[in-house]
Image (cartoon, rainbow, N blue to C red; front, side, top):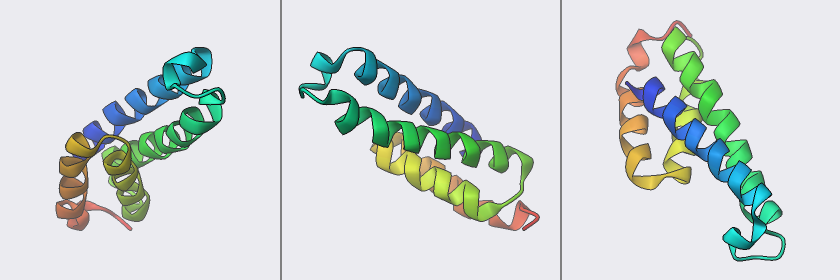
Amino acid sequence: MGGFLEIVIGGLSLLVALCSALFPPLAHAPDGFYLLAVPFLIFGVLELLGGIYAFKRQKWVLALIGSVCAFLAFFPVGIPAVIFTILSKGEFES
C-alpha cells in the first residue's frame, strides 16, 4: 500500500513540476520554475523510485526515502505512505 501511495504522489509531484514550469505565473513568482518545479521534480523522481522498489520489496531504505519525500510533498497523504513503508520493513529483501 505504501508503494502505491508513493507512485500516486510521485505522479502528482511531477504534474505540479510540469505545471509550474509551463505556467510560471501560477506559481506566483517570476522564477516560478526554479522555486516550485525543481523541488517537486526531485521529490517526484524519488517518490516514483521508492514506490517501484516498495512494490518489488527491495531496498527498503530507498522505499523509505520515497515515502519521506511523499510526506514532504503532500503532507496528509504522505503520512500513511511513511507508516505503511515502516510497517512493511520485514517484507523487504535488503
